[in-house]
Length: 544
Ligand SMILES: Cc1ncc(COP(=O)(O)O)c(C=O)c1O
Image (cartoon, rainbow, N blue to C red):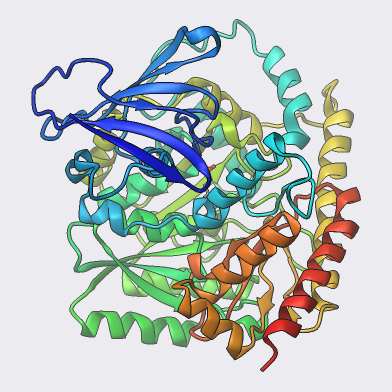
């Protein structure tokens, strides 16, 4: 057994870790104190825990978490996922000494990056804790999270009401692996009424949010690293992360910032041919509409061209339509890719299409409830059976999320008692988001050295920051991407958290940050003035 005394970012930890290969390691071999709050589900700050490590067994860690009064509150088995890695990294166990990590340090996991939960977000949590324990020790008194699309606060009250309307609340049993049939019927009816084309409950797979749907499709499509998926750049990091985990190749197609993040089919075709010439079998194309992090809405013509491109090139079209309700312009509307394909006369025999939707976004924003679905059309029966098998390995998605997914596709109708209130709330949330988008966009554009495209939909702005060469060199000298360097300095100076653009991909030599439009409206003016002041000082310091 070895003992480590570690100092990590000013917080003292002690940890002991020993190497076990036996199937049942004795309890209490490791001890952790005063951990900073783990990102998700780990050991919470102020608590203490014991963990066991096993090198060769499948379980690599177990923790008993102790709450106030020293009573054990829960026992956890370590997951292999990033959050657990993050927890352990946070508690300061060094790579060299923490031998248990060798069993989980598979290349794909290490390679996978998830920008929106990355270095800046973790640093923000540390600062948040510092503000709690040492008020006044930082040049700001609150952390303002503009880095992730978590619109939860606006929706709690409505979600409670909806839940209380559900008869029986009988959500405790396993369901069919694709989800409860009655709920899938509701979703299919909702899709049919949205698109004006029929939909079938058998094509619906209910999922814990859109993310597991993406993972399932990657698992289905990717055989090895010679299989490629075309993704927009910039892209939401779920796609690059999932591709890395499943060992496939990302084939980029670039969105054009100068034309409002538009796309040109001829450029897509070039990228496709380039990948094919390198021996990559391109199997699918991802389109995110409205875009994350870019906030653009494709016009109808671009959608037609994309559908035709996928049909002609025999690519599965993975249509991420989770922001289909988030539209802030009047000159464009959202058409689902299914509607576009059917209106072109293409049916299941012509195009393999997967449409992803989620309860996490829109005006409902129930992102912690984990509900979503994918509608899968055009796949042969044997392939569908494999997809069903993947779904059934997880038994079923959570039933509360299933219910919510059905509700977003079956909202109150004119004449229902709740309709007026529903419309009023929906309208007021979307209008408020639209005002915030416009206010933040024009504020960014009024700052020297920043340009920002219009947010037509989704929940983000992706301003371009024209960083001076000197700042880029200083960032490189400390081994940071220049936009990460900028974002960390912004956080340290103002408390504002944004996600660096490099996590989403960007044209080489350009630098961006992603900022949500979700700060409360009344906080936006002061946030913008803090941002402006910081930016001007930063630029003055590094001016070329
Ligand atoms: C474009 C896009 N797709 C998918 C997701 C995943 O959402 P969820 O798994 O919460 O449904 C997100 C989340 O931000 C997103 O922005």
